Amino acid sequence: MKSIIPFTIFFFLFSCHSSRVIPKDDDDIVDHLFSRYDVPNPGASVLVIKNGRKILEKNYGYANVGEKTKTTSETNYRIASVGKQFTAFAIAKLADRGKLDYETSLKAIFPEFPDYGKNIKIRHLITHRSGLVSYNNFIEANRERQILDDEVFQALLKTDSTIFEPDTRFKYSNTAYVVLGKIVEKISGKPFEEFIADEIFKPLKMENSIVYVPNAEIKNRAFGYSIKNDSIIIPKDQSLTSAIQADGGYYTSISDYYKWDQMLYSDRLISGKQLDNIFSAYTENGKSSGEGYCFGWNKIRINGYDVYEHGGLTSGFGAEVIRVPDLKTSIIIFSNRPKGSILTDIAWKLTEIYTDGKIVKK
Image (cartoon, rainbow, N blue to C red):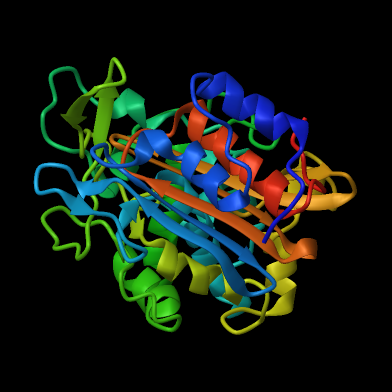
């Protein structure tokens, strides 16, 4: 593919690497954009899908710096909050089977939940409108052991209020997605990681993908790092919250994610009705065709197109996914170093290139 590269792309490249010659074709531009992720640095994998085809698939740097293991399309990255779309999809699967209703309250599912749970509905949890307190409040000083979903939930049972009245405003909530994971377990009767494997990963043959369980073997695993002063590589694979599952404890590869992306154009795993719910925004007025937060996706309108995106950031890892269904185009970037604004900027620049300038973030 040879496309006319907008001025903004050249400005971006020039501002990042002014001492280097600006490349002239798409392939060189991509390499240029990812130069800081290449060997000997922790890496990144990038995939661009258009009309069902992988029109760009590249891997940079090391998945394991110490062992000099290079990244591949099967490298398994921790994708952090990008994984919220899997958790939300699991809830939609249960709704599709009539096992739950988005209007059901927390108190109805968990009678032991504090009384304020009567006002929190499942849809509030999915769309970050619950008002639940941050689980970071439950991490005691000097703690060394990772906190788990069950501990977060048990600590939540001891709280006496929300930070705002449910459905009165949007506030991004990892805690809410932990609760969604507990709902999946309660309704399905399965451990969360087992439900996700049985209902998503196995049917789609996402053979590299897994929900993280401490000490579990993760094949083709990338290890996380941070970079100090643009040159010092520091192993940073886990944090105190890295073992929490439902808010983003997923490992997957660009090869596997391709299968997930393509499934979302069909009713293979879920009904069209639920797909419509998944890709609709929700506000204080309920379901909307406009902009807002969907089921694990941010929805914005650009030049008349619905654009869905989500980033992920956790200790040692970053991820960014942008999806434009009307153009059948998706941009996927996974990295084993923190996301920062650079990775997000790269994802939007690639979106601009591979939609021939139709999608330009303002």
